[in-house]
Image 1 (cartoon, chains in turn brown, cyan):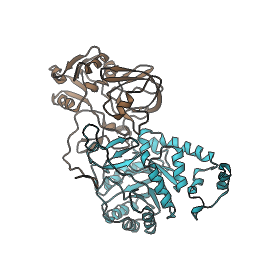
Image 2: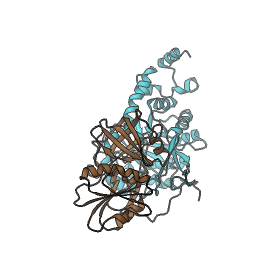
Image 3: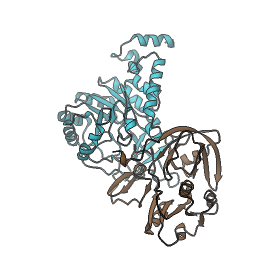
Image 4: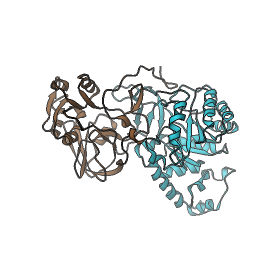
Length: 246
Length: 299
């Protein structure tokens, strides 16, 4: 029974002191004291509760030290906007680590990040001994975040990050927008894709984070978020709720 | 007594949480497997959340073969939530569950906003289910029913052993950039803090019309909320949305409830069951505790 679920024994939920919040391009890097939390494996995530909100938000761990955890936030919605406004000295409820992370035992790692998808890469880079890393961004302003991975190749639109992937046999570890992950998977190399889905709970209770894999919807927080291939599109009719606009 | 709300906890994924409950309520099971709805299935709002999960479940056959045996190895009693399109469906599900001694209660989900509408009235569904099983039956009602006390009475007369009040209520949110519905199905079920006064009213109204136990559910986040539900007439409370934000909600609320109840003079929170009805409810006895509260609060 236990084998199909990520190990739960290290999951903790604590109110952590916010140490520092800084701008990184358009993103915000939120650093909290680590408290009793285990950073887990790269690719695992934490649920951060924006103060005053009903639900927490899933965030990859960006960086970890002995005393701090750091999260890179893109303020694109109500929850992430609130998270980006916390200040040093505030208390932030953090729960984790959750989900299945990257498999690190790969012979030829090549890291690919797109935009805010680079969030788990600094922690991943440290765990793998600074492998070749390529980061793609929309603008030079967004690309300021590449400072968090100093040795990375940086590609800015209109060039795409996938155009910068060298030929050859690689084990790609990728995180970024869905079209980028689909393009990476099409390259045919072995890949691990850090997928995303809206989540209410992050630990398998709510069934919100449904992704279609092998004939049914599965919980991304349990079977992922790191997947070996992109989820499929089910050819199913939407079952409209009673009273929904037709 | 503290339970989870159906669909808000997976005991197999989180056995430690389930073991802290007085009973575990399964995600609703249907005759046929259901895929559930396409994403996006949830959306947070200012005072709650919307969901259109769509009753994703493996169907009754796989549930009986794979899920129930595993649930039975955990500590708490198992309540099985079921749903169907007609009273025949409910009866068939009850008949299949009747044979399994591990099923402590069958909860009839006659009120989920995220499935095709049920064609038969509550009374007919309960009566058909009653004929099909001797197991205790609880009926989970929608807060949007035009006459909830009558529905509760009808359920009791048809043989229900208890009522779960309430299910989610229809809600809609629009994406801030596109002004299109934020969840894939458009309208979904609304839950969380905004539902709490609605749920409390439902418990209060039905308690005065029925004599069967009520599980109060809807937006409970603290021991105070649980105590209020009990005071309104609930003899158990179920936790839903709060679990998503706080895995330790059951433990925390159980402790808070004991403190809140003790502060008002109750050695056991359930001693407060129904006291919100004061002298107006004929079934409420003015105990020594109530007189003491009246003295302390100067009323």
